[in-house]
Image (cartoon, rainbow, N blue to C red; front, side, top):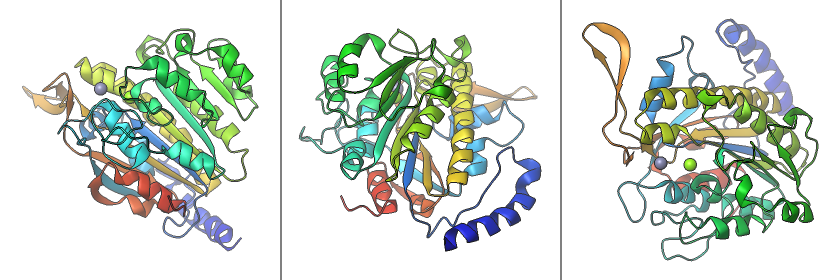
Length: 360
Ligand code: MG
Ligand code: ZN
């Protein structure tokens, strides 16, 4: 109750200061002492500082992720086997808290099984969720529920999903899932193309974008799927009085980098940023939610430059693959100070558990 009063008081003060230039109503909570009930981990696949800068070059106001960030860190992304990680090892390092070999999903570098954050927190009584703009068996979301030798083992990965450690999952992957089996396990299923996600009211469900494996690009008409899916997940996960853990992936920012297509990178990053705005607004009013926005690695070796007196940013890529530079970690909400500094990607796992006051 004391924290609530302090928060309300601070809200009045900061509201006056920031209302003018902020579309998001900032309700400050004490980022060093307030208890954390929920964690929302947002991963922009392939999203380094250059990708954020490219997105920023297209909008006048500061990116929502910049505005909301209270503490900033750098995550070193190399895997156990390579200087340059793949998305399996990158997400697995965050999920299990140990670096592993490229292509591994939820396994240590010696191929033994380690608990993912979702599994650990589910066991501790929290609800767990995943949202992605790719198929749900793709490397990043898979690293939060599956344990497989290789990220391309889709059949085995989806089999692990039926283990039931994820309460809410929204993304692509429809052709790989057996909906009858999902129903038998107690999941409701929805299609974004047919169903209104705002009216979903159940604690266990799987939402698919449509019947294809990967949702289309934002520029091809995906609309507000990422934001709508994320808020539908949060609204239903939040029914658990013990709190929740949600991983949200902006999956296709990486694909724009692989394609060396700056417009693809920018539109996907801005879509991710508007989802961050919605999450930020919810988290700030909730007051017990820690939000972390990071990446598994940078993709494309993107750089921004000027050309021939043209003052607009130009974009150049140095590779069609990932790079090995550290990526930013933006954090806000209670205990967000834990994410300042320069550290290995595998340390994010322990920081999340520490914020939740959970011993592994
Ligand atoms: Mg990914
Ligand atoms: Zn990639």
